Figure 1 (cartoon, rainbow, N blue to C red):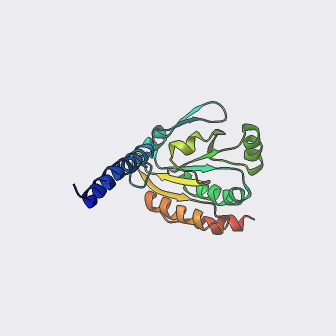
Figure 2: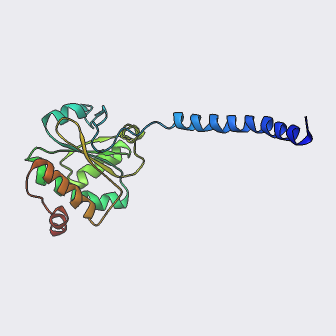
Length: 193
């Protein structure tokens, strides 16, 4: 064996373990990141949560009756400003079949005081541990999931928008889904100020 062929054999033997480790790391990283299943066009996840009175809210049962808007939110100043638009959205479409569910990631006592102060009329629950965010596969607060009657996700709107533009986009999607005229929730909320 010549010096060059021994050197080539040595390099081959030395690099095989590195390729094996790299391939193993690649396959491991794929297996630890679960595939995102909560997306537009897919069925909403199985989801139950208790409201402030301890009554179970079951998303599947709600979507049997009609569309549902699930809003994962907190009490930050941006979400607080945005709430007025979503309350207008709820009022505008509730009589047409929409159910709105706000899930707060704040302590119970804080949410109860907040609900009274804001005169919140929609269905709500508290999830201080953030399990709802895991079920809906999001870390963004707030995130709004519009779910059709029957459980298919129609739209996902993530992020905080205190101006009301995002709420107006959600209103447009709700109106399409309910086959009704869109309500300008941004304008309605600003008129009420």
